[in-house]
Image (tube, rainbow, N blue to C red):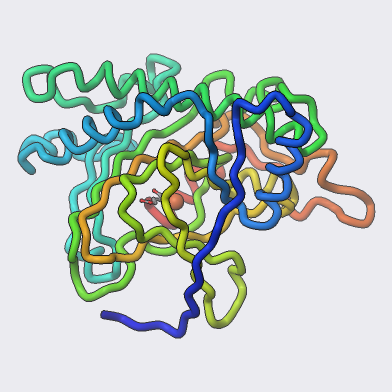
Length: 305
Ligand SMILES: O=C(O)CCC(=O)C(=O)O
Ligand SMILES: [Fe+2]
């Protein structure tokens, strides 16, 4: 197994309660979590009873014969990506399946679904999960706006989530694979925020200081029933780097692993520019305004996820 000069520690991420009536203190805790870690656990999100089924459906999909999954081969970033032997040798050992934005018909029609004969009721079940995750993301985003001293409906008002451009990604890591330590290589997420669910199998790690020579990787353990939430690059731009889009990866521990990631990205036409509350004369905006669609297209070209 490849060895790098790395120091490893274990981490207790902050816990945010989405159902708390104390919005100000919740917003303050979010602010602290996003500035220090860019990651937190989200509890009392209302989807507790949906999680078992979400993983059940995910496993059903990946259990299909390869030839069935290959009929849905990824196109326009929707559909199935098989385990890629060229990437396995570079330290990426996962198969995954993307469901793209469902809000408008043109985009929703690009999605690729297994037929009813192959997986009965799978599509409605996943569509329902998608919208429930979107509901959680939207609630959280209003708290994030609050935490940044903006109006709670700020992200709605600027058109970031009116037609949500969210991608749902199901992931399967088959277990002991290749000589490399990483099975999902180190990256930051591109968009606004990510809601992550894992099946409890460890392996997720974060590196809080992107610039350090010797990278310090910290283990993120799974908290039963909670989402692991992380800030993406566009939120980092919106906040002038106040909120951190933290680098993360998954290392192999020799066990099969499933996870579900929901990437809440801004609508492609939404222009992401430094928030008023995050810049001043002494702290000017570090990034020029950019159309979200242009930014994400560029990122996908450089680092196809
Ligand atoms: O599988 C995981 O736990 C992490 C997945 C991830 O970081 C991603 O899909 O961006
Ligand atoms: Fe990620």
